[in-house]
Amino acid sequence: MDKAAREALGARILERSNADHTEALVHSAQNELTRFTHNAIHQNVASNDVAVSIRAIVGLRTGVARTNVVNDDSLQACVERAIALARLAPEDPGLADLPNGGAVQTPPGAFAPKTADATPAIRTRMCEAIFEVAERDGLWAAGYASTNATGITILNTRGATASFDGTAAGVNVKMNADDSTGFGEAYANDVSAIGARTIAETAAQKALASAKPRAVDPGEWTVILEPAAFGELFSYIGDHFSAQSFDEGSSFLSDGLDKPYLGENVTIRDDYAHPLAPGMPIDFEGQPTQRLALVEDGVGRAIVTDSYWAKRLNRTNTGHALPAPNAYGPQASHLVVDPGSASIAQLIAGTKRGLLISRFWYIRTVDQRRAIVTGMTRDGTFLIEDGSIVCGVRNMRFNHSVIEALRHCEFSSDVRRTGSFDYSMVVPSAKIEGFTFTSGTDF
Image (cartoon, rainbow, N blue to C red; front, side, top):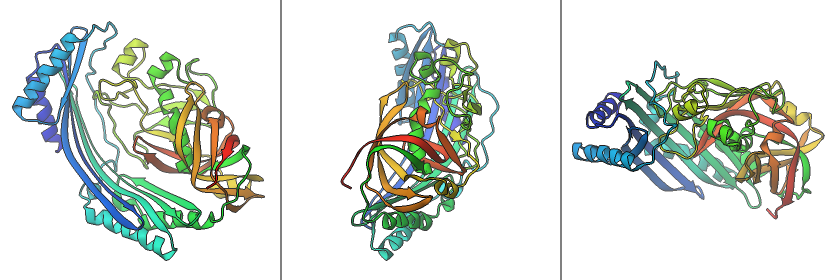
């Protein structure tokens, strides 16, 4: 559904409401996924849906109802359900006015027609390139290729009207050998920018190079995390920049802004316009999103807000709302970590003894406020001695604070886009001192 059709649908919703104020969120989503294992495609799935979320405000009460049936009768019923839910809800003295929007400009490259028009045949050709590399090297590959197109429109009775159209494509490859594995990934807005064969070559090289892995002792290590590993670790402090986490005391920033928290070489931004990950310039209330320095040279500088938390904390609305209602508060969804000055080859060359880690697996939070997490290495872990990669090592479990890691780190000069089903970010590789491993494995 294009922007004009979404806006027309949103207007039909507002016309039907007699609430004090009403918000219509129209979300069209085309998601396509091709999964493979043992060098063969085993699943092709696709969905194409249009859904609406209606927020009705009656006095100091709010109700939200949703439907993906958008004929007149269904829209009328959904509006009435949202109003009825609002009348049943408890009053919220902190309820804020809906935003009245503002001018926005979608960053270049956010929408790529080739991704929106991608067919199963295109994803099949990407998979075939991966299989050719795997079969050449006597490996088997597992993973996926995905293409998505999303359209968002928000209208409300205070005059906000905002729309965004974006695309995303990704390839995730795990190469499997007899006693080792390797990993590669790529994400971009334009599917034609993803080199599936190149990603497969990276994953295959890691699988072959880590064959016959050695066991090393747990303890404190110097580690070099490639972007996929660092991004997965870093994602566990993403919600620390939320005004809700800040106010409730679960953020490492909760002791106050303008204080040093991380290393002086650490600058973290929320930037929807980064060239590697151009994204949505509005939030799910239609408020323009601000590009923010969250941590600057190690000093906490900003948190992100929506209308509710901006009013509650008497701060500016930075335009980071999620769809209402949600338990997470506003979120920084376009995180970027500024690079350092050394290449990853120089970081490795400068390491007396350490580990090079491709990715982590199943990270879970141990202590929210201190951002202590636990997880496993996976799909390519290597021993570094005297500045050179020596061999693959068996996987290990770590238990470490992300905050402590960011106090004792050095970044590479290049950045990459990395992600998963619930995050996307732009980060460099990171060399971290004193990273704690608590146990080893047999694989």
